[in-house]
Length: 172
Image 1 (tube, helix red, strand yellow):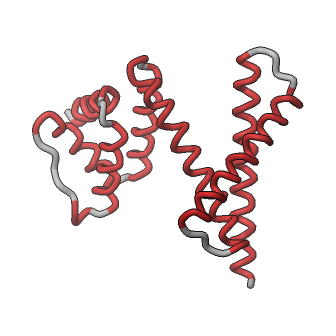
Image 2 (tube, rainbow, N blue to C red; image 1 turned 120 degrees about the vertical axis):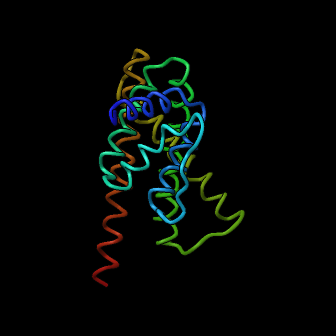
Image 3 (cartoon, rainbow, N blue to C red; image 1 turned 90 degrees about the vertical axis):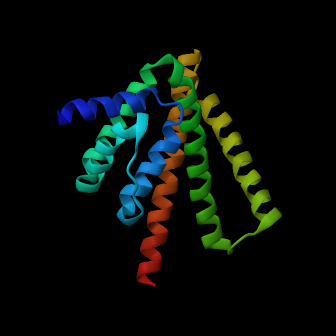
């Protein structure tokens, strides 16, 4: 019985047009149990996921990962989710870069912050172009793989720099 409800909840999320907003809402309810509400109507099947998230957060996250994988198999949702994930990664990457920049140079506001973001994007675009030239990628598949490698390299470097920043501040 419980597995039937879980299956229904997973299937609902796979097909949900408001998937991202729904998952954010559910995560807020799990993180703040006092503010939790119970779903009614067609989305009442999601209550089983809220219960799971409250008792076993890792299992909840694994279910969401499964849902995201299944959504990528659905042509109707794959393109929208793919674009959403790209934009989320770009925002996250830029936020890390700004954190590092502000740790070195002090906080930025307004136009100065926007200008620095544009400058960072410009440096990344130039570096990506140089990386693609060096990689010698001929086909579109090779090019796509080189682009993924480039962004993975940038993400690793940002994460390493942030970790070093935290180690340095902990020692100082």
